[in-house]
Length: 322
Image (tube, rainbow, N blue to C red):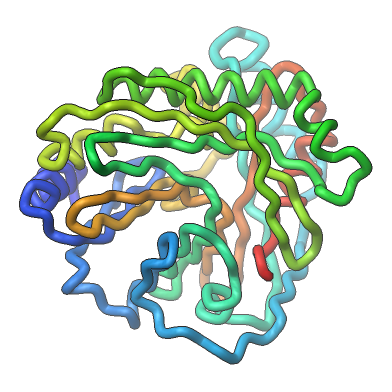
C-alpha cells in the first residue's frame, strides 16, 4: 500500500470509528492497515495491553535462544561510521542496530505465546515483535508518548543509581525526550513532560533488566479522529530508534547499517473505535528462509564506548518471560 493511501484510509476509518490494526515499516515503503473484522488470526496475531485476537496457549515450553554473535570488529566498523557523523555534527544521537542469528527449538508462534510484553505482533510467520515501548496513545483529545532510552542489568549492585547517574545515559535520554517533545508539538498543543526518567523492571529468560522511560503528553485538535493517519505518519520514524536530528541521522543509519530495517523499528497499533494505542517494533525476531535473526541496538553519542555498546546490543537479544 502506498503511504498516501495508508494515510487516507486511517483518516477515514478514524473518522468513522472503524476498529483497525496497522503497521508501518521503518522506511515507510510497505505499510498495511486492516479492519479488525477482517483480521485472519492464521496470518496476523496481535496483543496490545490485554486486547488480542490470539487463542490462549496453555501449554508453554521454556524458550531458549542460542546467539551467533557477530564479531566485535564488524560492529566496530558500523560504530565508527556513526561516530564520524557525531564528530562532524551531523547527529547528536544515532540509534545503531545489528542482526544476530539465533537458534531455537521454538516456533515464532510458541515464542509469541510465551513472551510477555505490552505490544506483541506475529505477522505471517515472517516476523515477531514483543515490545515494551509505546509509540503514542491517542484518545480523549490527548496524545501521549513514553520514550525508552537506557537499559542496565538489574542484578548489578546499585543498578538503578548507576543508570540514573550515568552522564552518557542522561544525555541520551534528554536528547530523545527533547526530540519526541518537538515531534509531538507538530500535531498537538500544550506539550509537556509529565514524568521524567522513571524505572521499569523487565524479566527475561536470561536476566532481569531495568529500563528508563519518560512520559510526554499533548492536547489534540477537536477533529483529531479524522486525522489519525496524518498524525501518526508525521511523527515517523520514531525518535527513540532513529536519533536527532532525524533527517541526517537516518542517512547515517543507512550508511552504517547498509541494509533496510523493514518492519524492525517501525510502529504498529490498534484502534478500537475511540482510542489508538501503538508500539515501537523493538524486541524483534525475523525469519529468513530457514534461519532466524534477532534485531537489537542502542543509542550512540560522542561519549559512547564501542565495547559497551556492542555488549548492550547483544544483551538485548532475549525473550521477556514471567
